[in-house]
Length: 93
Image (cartoon, rainbow, N blue to C red; front, side):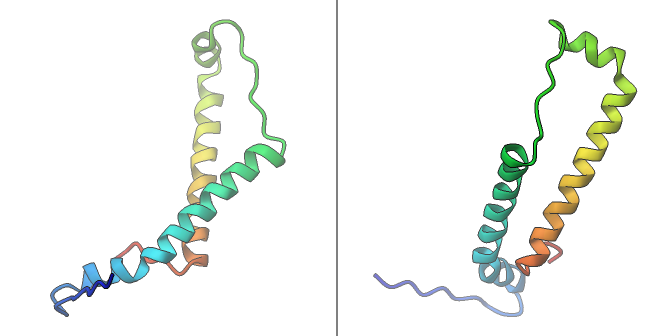
């Protein structure tokens, strides 16, 4: 089986960039997933047992919970961009 993919450049330049980056994008996604798995499995992150009603616990500590959520999202975003950069993936096409 043979496939020929054609692009009309420069009109299809964005589609061409996406197509040529696809293998690197897949590698980046796999690497990011592996890093998240490693963090959970090997770096000692654990679930904290909350009282019987987690919503009550969260409400009692809303400021702390919001701060932790912010830090987690910021950390994951940084890791995500590091992985994209390591795999030479450009998302600003």
